[in-house]
Image (tube, rainbow over all chains, first blue to last red; front, side, top):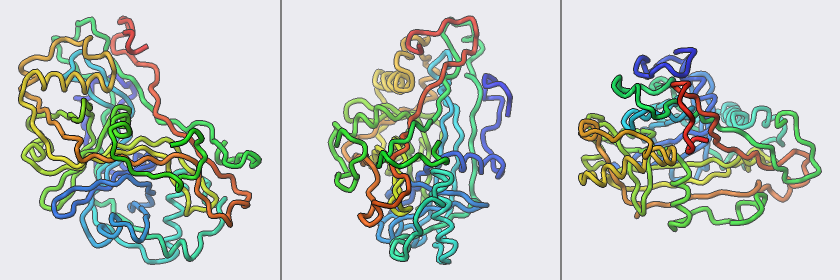
Length: 205
Length: 205
């Protein structure tokens, strides 16, 4: 929305419904929280996922209570959040967070086509570590039988984005308190090998 | 559970119900996802929080639909996840994630005592940036009237922790594929000031 991170956020619209905003957030985040309810009791499960086109894929064990419940048609709310910074205003009241989040309301579609199931597993693996799938032995029939793949439409997805600096009250602007943004970032550190004699593949360099 | 990160996780118990495991996870993570359901439709809201003793506090606008729904007694599921590493096995099937998560089942208790309300807001502010609260002008009566503070018991909280290396099938152990862990970490970058003439306070150094 802006080239400066310190434009007060109240000037900007936070909600977005376009793929140009939603897809990059889903592609950058690695994990989502899938919420569902059983007899009014909410449950929430963090899990890996991948997006392709306007579908989001997750996978899980065929025996998992979570997977079986949402496979049976329980409506879900899938949420993803990237935290970009802590926004420190001159008052506690105007402290905030710079974030990019997506919320999806959907019902699971069980993927039954074997090629699409395999592709979804490749997408989920490569979402975590791009290039990884091609380096792995083929997935076996037995492993595929133990795995459920579910797809969710992004039709009812929306994003919220906050950027910029604090939105202080005009009468607070001259207070001596430091105000601004503490940026946050999730980083990957040097890979730790299981077998010290294997060279690190290019996609992990 | 172990001093080496590359002990296969299947040797370890993942679920924990003790404060010694649960509290440090809640104290290290900054944001939780609060899930609730309205007529069977799950909703999920990411928010800041703070823990003190066996209570978790959140706050929000008195007018927020989310706050009003859970204040009225809708059961919630609060989830927190720290992702410590991507676990790369020799097969896609055994890929995993090192994480520390907490799930809390609870119903909101509205905090009405003004001193406890103020203390909760100080805890939430200092959870994001330790030392910040003491540097801020006093919160006004008007700001307090616009703010709801809710507390949740940690009585029904549980943690799940995965550490260690991949748990490969014995027959895959000699495959040449690189396996191991890619550690992940969330870091804070150099603060970006709103007013360039203010010195950076000690608690942000």
